[in-house]
Length: 199
View 1: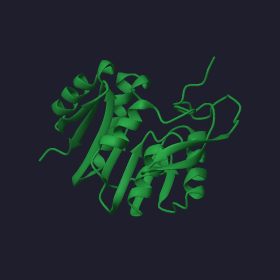
View 2 (view 1 turned 90 degrees about the vertical axis):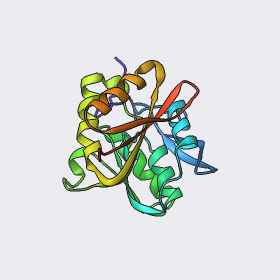
View 3 (view 1 turned 90 degrees about the horizontal axis):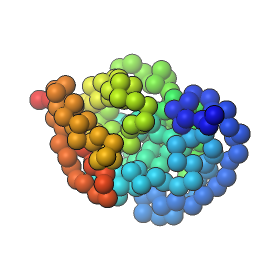
């Protein structure tokens, strides 16, 4: 049985290799491995988010929810060197890869963590996420209702979701739970949802 990228400890061999990917306007070398999400490249949804979300603020506390090997967290760290960036994932191999990649890129402002390792009172000025839709609707909803309420009062989240995997129903669900959720843009079959706390 193949690993799910949302497995805490992937059973596949930790065979690391280096690939070159575009991050923050330049091609950069990163480490990837089997057993994590999109181990061969930056997946299309993440690429859409990185290319079409508005530039992050210059500082603040940011969250990449479901960080994988780190393309979003690393990009946030590169674009906003004065920000503190958390990359959160259940997958321990992914978190180790993020730590290696951040160190290789000189990003002391990027830190990988499991949900339990993030201080309970930590709030976030910005969340960027390609959320793990395939964990199932209930698990996804639990994830979002755990983290989106931790936005600061003027914080904002940008979530990229494939249209045919339920982006419009997710937007409706978020609105029903009191969040201000709108379609920021639509690119190549993906929606970027802009989510902020209800006023």
